[in-house]
Every structure is written in C-alpha cells, then in structure tokens.
Length: 196
Image (cartoon, rainbow, N blue to C red; front, side):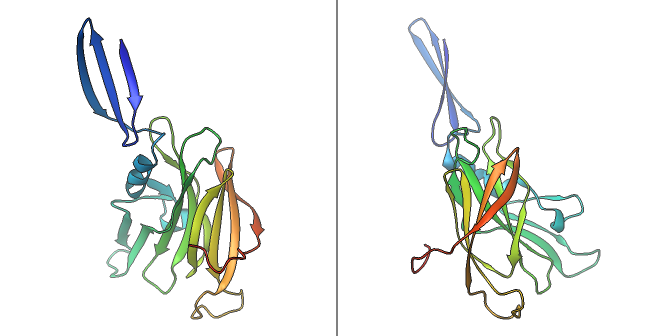
C-alpha cells in the first residue's frame, strides 16, 4: 500500500508497506496546503507585470528582477517583492493563496506599486495579472477577508505634488474571477488609529 501525506513544510512522505516491513521515503514536493511553502516560493516566481518588461512578465531571483534600463545605461530596471503580503483562500478551493505587493523602478524618480494574486495550484503556485496601485505610495496592509484582497494604502490627491509624502488613507478591494484579478470597489478607510 502506498500512502501520500502532505505536511506543513511542503514535504510529501511516501510510506511503502510490504508485509511487516516499512520503508519511508521523503520527497520534496509542492504542497498547496502549506502557507510556509507558498511564502518560500514567492521570491522566485514569474509575475505578469506588463509595464516592467517588453515580454509582459518578469522572473524574480531571491525576490528581485534587475537589468539595465537600456543598453549601456547605468540606470537599472528593477522589480522587487514588497511588504506586506496577505494570505488566505481567494478562489474558494480551500487552499492558501497570497496577495503580493510588487514594486517597480526604472532608476528615475518614479516608484510604482502593483498588486497581484498568487493562487496555490495543484503542482505549483501561479501569479495572476498585476493591477497598478500608484506611484510613490505606501502600502500599509494587505489581507485576505472572505475571499477578497483588502489593501489599505496611503496616497495623495490627484493634484498634489509627487514630492508630498502620501497621507490620504485609501482602502481598495480586489477579487479573483474567472482566473483574473480585478478591483470591485473602494471601501471607506479604517476607523481605527492605524493598521498594523
């Protein structure tokens, strides 16, 4: 008899029973049931982010993608995995998914923030489309509640100078529908003194 069991560290244990003899073999495997396995996978995944690369996606290495902004340029085109991140079930399958904050810079004054969802697949996690959140904003929190991503941000007015630190509390809500991440509506800012 062969039995597969998934543990929280993302390791599959195969128990081979033959008569009274028991042999146990540990095999490294992706486990969609493990938040820790998903968190470990995020820094080395491919993320769709059309504005960052002509191919429409970038592959992070230890949380960072980096290349010259142009041939021979000293400026670097960089995308990195930001904080915070949120975890929970986004598509109703009972597995732990993630809400991820990606940050993009081409070496100029702009620092662009994007949100994407990472779904825990049967074999490996998959990043969905990225949605632009803003330029030089602050992402105060990301969390998954009732199948939706709730992002609490600090932004600035549309007419405010970019040199002004973001100070306007903004809450935005996103859901996964038909394999795509989309924004559903804006929510009022939290009434508490701050989001941890």
